[in-house]
Image 1: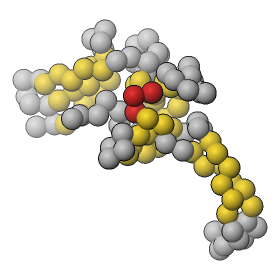
Image 2 (image 1 turned 90 degrees about the horizontal axis):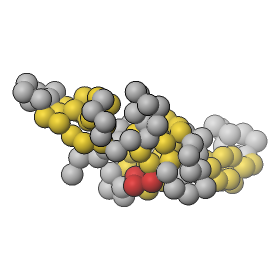
Image 3 (image 1 turned 180 degrees about the vertical axis):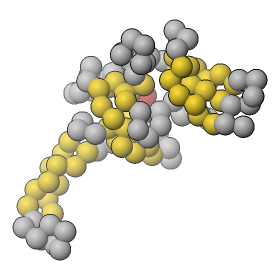
Image 4 (image 1 turned 135 degrees about the vertical axis):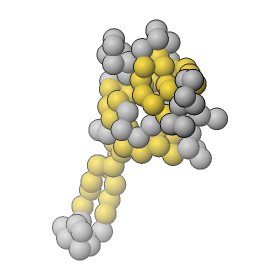
Length: 109
């Protein structure tokens, strides 16, 4: 099954505490159908002192959000939009918003 979200996409969160906000996708976890969105769904993580973090303490970490709770932002309307996949004559597969505007190329022939 093709995922409608890719790393680097700008997405709108449509459910949960951050409903209505947008952010950039940092990582996609296809095995669990989840995405990590920059600056959203933050939790405090307690870390021991280490070379990377010599002070230790609490840090904010983004937690995954289920992929069904985000929509890619349509560049034409700047809102979240459902996505369809369209195969061009040259064999490339493109993500197209429901209103017809192109969101991005998924795969080239």
